[in-house]
Image 1 (cartoon, rainbow, N blue to C red):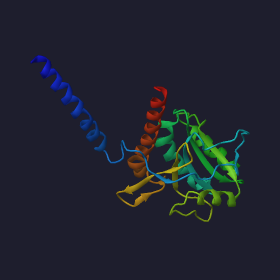
Image 2 (image 1 turned 120 degrees about the vertical axis):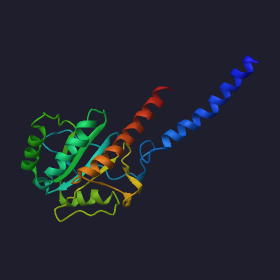
Image 3 (image 1 turned 45 degrees about the horizontal axis):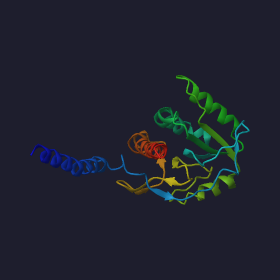
Image 4 (image 1 turned 90 degrees about the vertical axis):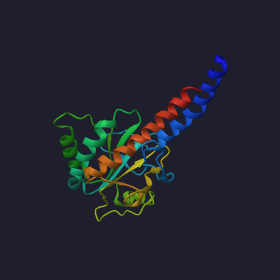
Amino acid sequence: MKQKIQKNFVLAVLFIFPVVIYLFFASGKNNFAKLPVLTYEINDLSDFKNHNVSDSVKLDNHITILCYWGSNLDFRNGDAFNLNQKIYKRFYKFKDFQFVVLLTDDQDKNIENLKESLSSGAGTDLVKWKFLKGSKASIEKHFNSLNTSINLDSKYSTKYVFIIDRKKNLRGRDDDEDIGFLYGYNAESVAEINNKMEDDVKVILAEYRLALKKYSLR
């Protein structure tokens, strides 16, 4: 009798536990599901050069926050500060995480000014901020490979920043409660960074942590 009760208990646990786990993960809108792929295999960065560094920067095998600030970097200082405070400082220690900013060739002075501003105060380690320079045509060409509904302004810049996965895919939301398809995140809006972007960065980092854990167990 006792063995039968134990057997029934084990069977009940085996049946109920997966249901409970499913309900737990399904309870958050975007907290546990994979972040949707919106565009596959965007262009690489071969048309750009790293500012003051000979090392090349690649999207492959990195989780990238991608910014298009063209010839408008001095106007995007506020965006950079918001991202640095809310996203970069929180996640930059993740091994393959990086910020990539695409700029025109004339932005050297503005890059140095921004780096000095970001590193002041708490002394942020900017090792994962990558400032890449290229022509206006190369910025536009790369931006078009995202295939979004967003446009660059006259200075080849946008307030929206993008999450790119390790396979060079654009990630975002295909069922955002406000606009439906969320291709990029408004870096001017602290609320959007806090309420959407931070959550989605957590999702994609968790996704890769789980993948690494699964691989290591094989």
